[in-house]
Length: 209
Image (cartoon, rainbow, N blue to C red; front, side, top):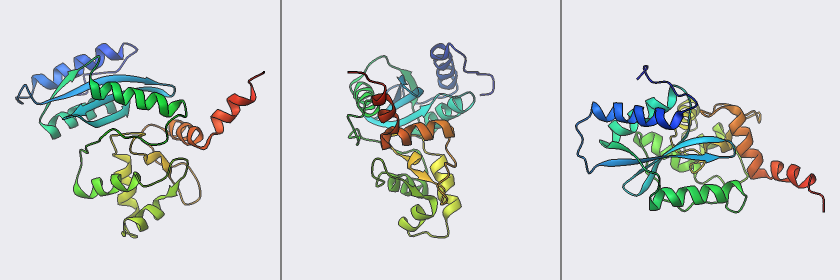
C-alpha cells in the first residue's frame, strides 16, 4: 500500500487505490462497499456503505486512508465500488450537512462496525454521550465497567472508523485536554466547538442587521 499517495487529485487517487485493492482480492462481485467522498466545512471525508449501513466515515489523510480502505475490504470480504449517488450515501450526506448547519444533533442512519467485540462495545458506548457534552477516558472506562482499561479503551477510540456519527471526539483527558484523535486535534476542537455553539456564536457576532 505504500505505493499510493493522496494528492490534490484525491478523487482519482482513491479510485486508483480502490482498483489496486480489488485486483488482489477474489471476493464475490455482488459483495461491495459503496465508497464516496463527502466534503464538509472541516475537510473531505471518505465514506463507505456496506449492506445499507455506514461502515466508514474518515477524514482523508495520506497513508491512513489507503490502509483503512484495504482493512474494510478485507474485513467485509467486499470489493470497493465508487458511487456518485445511492440512497444511503445521499442520506448520509444530507444528515452531515444538517449536522454542520446546526440543524441536527442526532444521526438516524444505521451503522456497522469493523472491529473486535471489545472495540465494538467501546464504540457503542460513545453513542450514549449527549450532543454538546464530553466525558473523560476514565469516565468512559467506568461506564463500560472496566475502570482499569482506560488505555485499551482510548486505543479502541482511536481505531473508530466512523467519525462524527460515532462521536469519539467527545472523549477528552481528565484534565480537560483534547488528547488522542485520529483526525487531528484541530478537527476534534472544531467538532466540539460546533456542538457547543462556539463557532456559531462567533459567526453570529459578525452579522449586521
